[in-house]
Image (tube, rainbow, N blue to C red; front, side):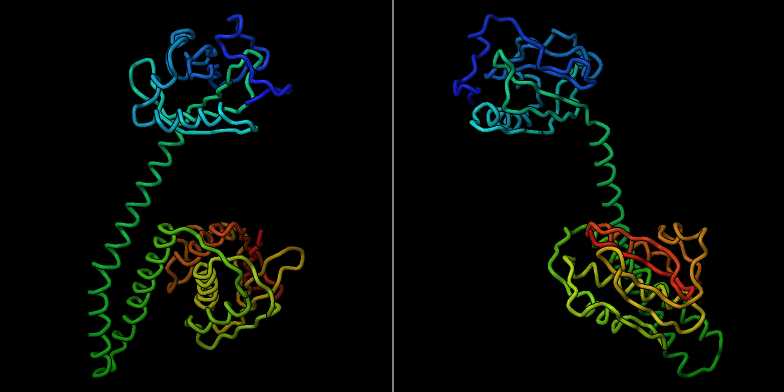
Length: 346
């Protein structure tokens, strides 16, 4: 690394030993440290007492690697060496476990750049990320529990449900009992819930993969694979309109919006897929009874359903799959009184 004159800055040993703090924001709530080219700590701000439990000067003169968890030392020091060795401006940020005053370790994130101070020291800005790491770990555990639950549902319930539906079909063929007919929809609803839960958890276990997708043709294909009864589909999108989208997620968005329009209206509806007027994106609207304004936000919540045949999962899938692609979803009223879901493509 070279200064504005093309010369390598003086190291700590070559300077007069006085640390210049003019380049350091002393009022930061983060821990600010100065390291020499060898990674030895030359200064730390008073915030170290609050963040890590050490006295301000307790670690001065100590190699920084002695303060890292043994499993993190190699990666962190390699990042620091990359900064010191660079002839160009670079910034490194890395997460690792830092020793605390009581002998335990705390998760932190440190950021440094290849611009040293006038004495040739490197400024390290460190912040506590223990809460974020804990929340991330809790989310991972929650997703794992959800995965286990979905597997239980799909494997332990799908088989007996299939047996029950099969036997019901055979009994109905031999009997006109209306009570038997009434059992069909509850069993079908259970089967849809199993499929939707599997869809939801499968998305959370895989990365989003996008490619240019013709939206109009995907809407028509999704309509053909959805039970829509006597309802109709109108597609007003330009046939050439393409957006970067995850093929599978987009299909699920359309399928669940179409099913929602059919299930939540008392009779057949016309569903329209058209372009947004003022920005990139499209809408899915129906000419049914619509959604009361006070319920517009609630309909996207997990488990919310106003229809006896609804599962309360379909619109959750829509919301998550739209957001996963970096798009935004809004619920409003259609021009003819039904429900309208607007998807803005960023």
